[in-house]
Length: 70
Image (cartoon, rainbow, N blue to C red):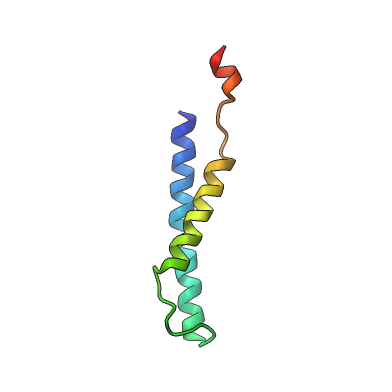
């Protein structure tokens, strides 16, 4: 069950991170502070969302292996 919760947290972090990064990208393009080659759902946004999901997964509470092996 803790693995499921960790995976669910990571998936939620990925989705919310991607939405937020796409919104920031769109805002930067509208304000003309970003290069025109920067696009929504590009490498920067997906990479940032993956990093957020990885951080969320690693911070999720997982059982300690020593307690599980007893």
